[in-house]
Length: 388
Image 1 (cartoon, rainbow, N blue to C red):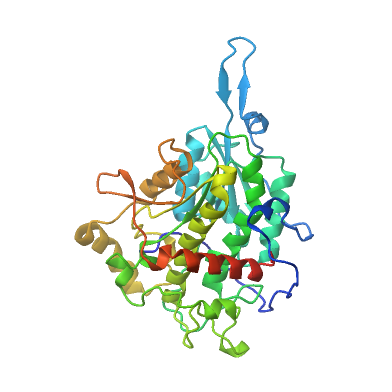
Image 2 (cartoon, helix red, strand yellow):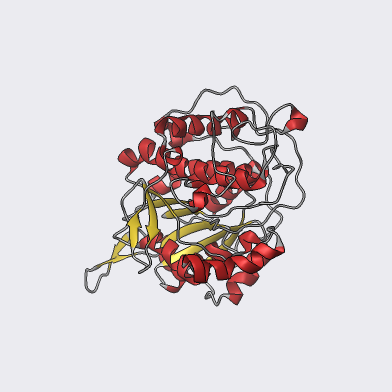
């Protein structure tokens, strides 16, 4: 089922982004993606100063023993204030080999969560990021670059899930919330930070986008109605504006809004985006692009908007009937594997784990692996976030 947990922004306008007329960005043009100037954030962007190794080169040579030592890596994780994101942040920070940038909408919540999880001072930095605002995404990128830290891995984890919603809500840019946050916000973030990943001297740079079994219709869980289906993307092409804007809030153009399907559709977008990034950029940059399903985290806060009976029965159902239950701690370790394990460097892969907690390359459904649809999705997304 659904995995990632993030916060639903509280007060958002419904205005559409300005319609630019710039030319389509070519595959190799990500090194010069334009940045909009944005006002400074009103919150502190750091709660901990990265330890000295963060700023050192990819490897350094000791004057005494002349041995090369790998510097501490820097990973950005969205939605790191709870659930899978927090568990992965803790797992990586505890190794001492990674400095974690917790990219979160709720700054104070993230600070309390890191402290409660026992993350050591100096092992993490908190920066404000609201994926429901494309301006906030651009501001985050600007603030991250001003920090002087390199970027060695990016984890697009945050998500919202509104399974009982029958009316859409919208991002600050006027897009349906589930797709706006889960896909479009992450799409812009990934595209803008590709340059930073490409400049990194770290041996294995990775860009990871969380997938979901619920968006994969070649599985039993993926066939639970409503099933994910992007159709011909006509709703996305129309801007996901909803009926009140003479359009549809659903990617496939359906008239009626379904919050559960909107989430599942957004996860297909995540998995298609990973594959398209792999096709466009892996060969030239060497960056590893990957997606994953770490297992069913039935107790995650992602289900907080589901009906009470579901929240009560779903965890024991997964534990004792399907045997698919995975704790937040275990799922965090699995995500940390995809970030750092030397054996998981293959690009374009959708990772899963078996009952023995061994990783393997899983197969995506036809819908979630269609290269033509992935290319069209990519091009439409570029336009919607202002990159084309």
